[in-house]
Length: 128
Image (cartoon, rainbow, N blue to C red; front, side):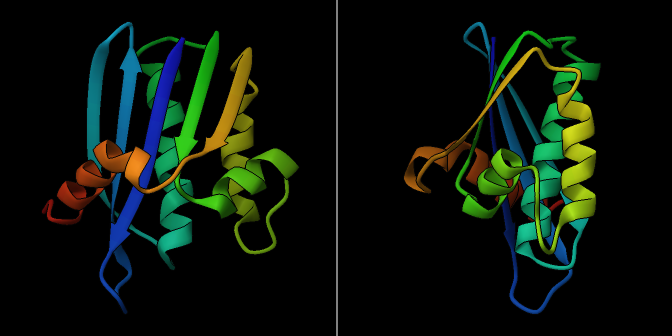
């Protein structure tokens, strides 16, 4: 079982965003942060979820049970509905990866509950 927390951070009027991914596996934390180019903060949230899932599958080889936590309602709702008006391409990438997972449970959490991923996203924003 894995718990994946994702978040994105950015500056207004910028196409560069930081994404943070905190993965907890058997009380061990994997902390990832990246700078990404995205059209807006919502797309950056999708990119964070994609990177988190990809890392879990390819690096940790964990495909049994994954809890995905995000403070982005758009992301969590889109995953649940398997539809996004504005981010369908990114959602399709995520859904394709999710087919490799036995059980994936996306859950919305508050900003306060997502502080670990948020701090990593801020670090990603300042990565060269």
